[in-house]
Image (cartoon, rainbow, N blue to C red; front, side, top):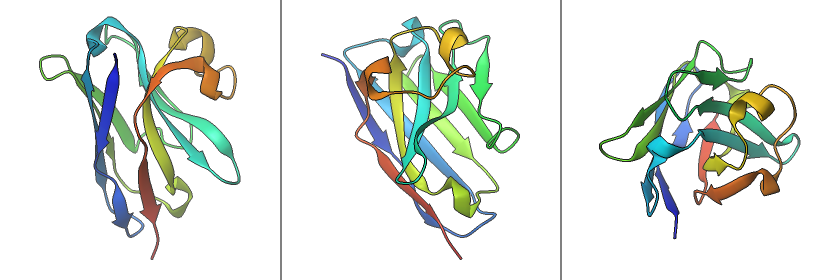
Length: 130
C-alpha cells in the first residue's frame, strides 16, 4: 500500500519561506511522475508543481514559477517543495500526489481532479498572512 506522509507548512508572513516534505512508503517515488497540488475553497484544486519520472522535467504553475522549487530525493524516497517569497494567495491546503497520467499530458492542460491521482498525502495547511 502506498502511503504519502507530509510535513512542513504553517503560518508565515508575506515574503517568508516554507518547505514542504512528502515521505513515501510502499512505492518508490523515482518510478513515477509526482506532483504538488493545492486546494482553496474559492479556486478548488490546482496544480502547483510536478516532476517527471526521470527527474529531467519539472513543471510549475505560472503563479509560483520563480518562487517555488520542487525536488525529489530518491535515496530517502521523499518529495520536497521549497516555497520562497510566499504571497497571501498561496494560502491553501497542499497535497503531494501521484498522478495516474504523465504530467506532460495534464499539468498545463487542465485543472486537476481528485480522480486524476493514485495516491495522496494527508494535506498540509499553508497560511500566508500579515
